[in-house]
Image (cartoon, rainbow over all chains, first blue to last red; front, side, top):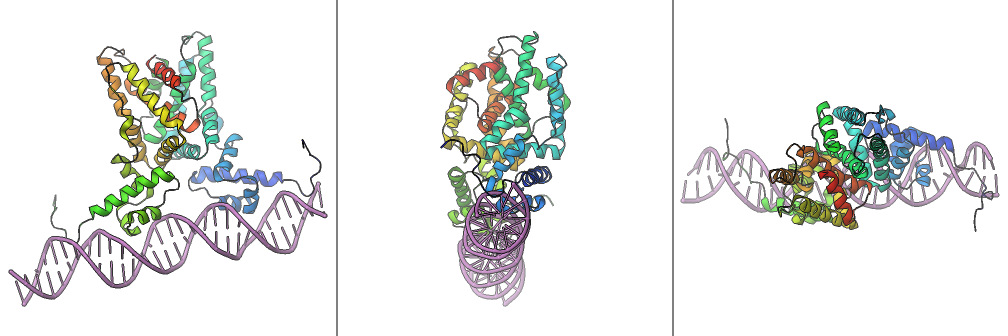
Length: 191
Length: 191
DNA sequence: TTAATAATACGCAACGGTGCGTCTCGCTGA
DNA sequence: TCAGCGAGACGCACCGTTGCGTATTATTAA
């Protein structure tokens, strides 16, 4: 009962292997996308036995989820700026994402993340919070309310959800991703 | 040149087989979801050779796309009502979708559609237009403008995108789908 | 008119290939 | 001493392709 921490014999988990596996997942994900990422490919690139992967992760989506949790799957250049002007900041951020999505590889990255999210709820939540910037958008909207740039009675949580959702819809279903579309979208949300 | 319609020799395409295949796709999609739907399973259930499938469709996603195009993948009970009151109609419609998503099977259906959309842009567009009800939402919003229930200078296309996007985000990332959440979301969109 | 021929789609079965997830092997190191 | 390790063989499922023999159809020739 309780914690029996010290009574384990034998070798502990190899942190080196773990890192090599997660590095390989990140690399393969960006090169080939989620659908054609394979456990065997990851094991080969990481120089690791398959069993070492299956010992610690049960599915491909679990593996990708842990990568996402550690922020290895995409660059953090997509951070939401904060210049004090809420509208400009959002347009800038949405514009950056649109620019990424105009590049086929970048769009593939986004759709792969969405595909992974459909396979693993944890990824979906993390995507919503991290990549989608849901939390940061939410925080930024809240800050905008405090700065008087947004009416205090606007439902910021729902607006954030709608904004991020529109990005996802554009990623999977097409729709304009030109710079002026960022302006239209943000203005529609901010009304 | 032009249309040489009648000058083909040999047996024409079997409409019976085509229907059997699309029926099987629809059935398998709803039973097992997009990820674990297989061509071989479809062929077996349809009583058809695999080659008959590969002759007319090149990929699994193409197959699913055609099913979606013909409206066989989900019931049409999700149609957007039109009682004349825009807000009530939208809340009602979003509420129906939320109800579907609260059922694990229904949510699986939606996430499977999203997964299929990440594999096939055509599916994405159709999803956006048909299931997402993008067109009908758009039409309904436009009608609302004409009825004076929405300011004429609201960007209805972007609002529609945001609303449908929020539904998708909730499907993949969680988020509240209780009846009152439908009210919050619709009111956020309509401001 | 009628029979032969050519073109095409069909169901079926088998193929090599790929990746899955499980399962042993020795080996290493705490 | 013994759990984790790299390696890799195994059976399985499904992929996409190919060849077979048969049906169905339009064209052509008798």
